[in-house]
Image (tube, one colour):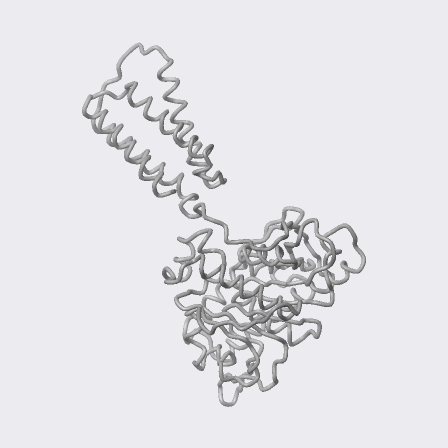
Length: 434
C-alpha cells in the first residue's frame, strides 16, 4: 500500500508538471483540483480503513494537507495578475516536491502497515510497564554512582481469575523488550504472565516510567560488532567478553525475577496477583537466549527454557594453554527447546562459539531442537513484520521463509512447549525442520 501511494502521488505530480509545461501556466484550476483530490483520496483511504492510521503517516498527511490548503486559498483568491511562466521553474518544483513526497513517506515505508500475527487464545490481553531500581548494583555504563534500573513490560490475561505461569524474556543484542510482542501476546492469550526486560545500554533504547530515555552504549555496540569480525579479538578476549555480557544479562533477569516474586506475595489488584510463583519459564532471542540458558544454571526455580537462535555462552570454557574453547561437561536437566534459523544452524557443527550447541553434545541430549529452514536470524522476531527494510539490512538480505509462517509457527511451538512442561497439557513432539 505504501509503495502504491508513493507511485500514485508522484504520477499525479508528474501529470501536474506536464500539464503546466504543455499549457504554459504556472497556476491553473486543474492543478488546484488535482492536489485537493489527492488529499481527499488519501482521507477516504484512511476513513475506509484501507490505510490504517499510524504516526508514520503524519508527515505525508501533513504535506498533502498543506498542498490542498494552499490550492484552496488560490481558488478562492481573486487573481489580479498572471505570473510569468518558466519551464525550468516547473521542472525544478516537480523534482523538489517529488523529493519531499519521498522523504515524508520514509517512516511509512520503513514501518509499513501489516497484518498482526494470529492470537489464538481465549483471553483478552492487557499490558503494564514498570521500572525497577536495583539498590544492590551501580550502573557500570555511567560515571555517576547511580543504581542500575531495569524497565519491564508485562503481557497478561485481562479480567481473568486465578494465577498463571510466569515467563521471563530477554531480547537480543541491540534489541528492545517489544521484539517478540506477537509471541508474548499469543502466550498471554492462553493463560501466561509474560514479562519482557529492557537491558539498559544493551537495548537499542529504553524508556523508564519517569520518561528517562537510555540508548545503546556505543562501547558495547562496538564490542559486539568487533566480536563478529573473525580474528579481531583473541580467543581469550572473546571468551571474557561473552562472560561479561552474560553476567550483566543474568544479573538483570535474576533481579527482575526476585522483584516480581516478592511483589506477587504482597500486591493485590495488579498484574502480580495473577502470577503462579511455582511455575516459571525463561526465554530469549540471540544474546537473550544465551542468558536464559545461563540463568537456568544459576536458579533452581526455573522449570523451562526456550533458546531462540543463541550460542550457549555459559556452557563454554577456555583453555588458555591450548588456546581453545570447549564445552563444559555438566549435564543440563532443565527442559529446553532450541529454535534455530539457517544463520545459526550452519554453525552448530563448527568449532566457533556454538561448539556447546552441537546436537551431539550429550549434556543436552534431552533438549528439543528445531530448525526453520530458509529463516534468517531476525525471522524469529517481529521485526520483518514491522520493518522488512530494516530487517533485511540488519541481517544482510531477505529470508527465504515466509515471515508470517516463521513467527506464527514459532509462537505455536513455544506455546505448546510451555503448555507441556509448565501446565502438563498435551504432548510436545516437534518436527526437526519447519
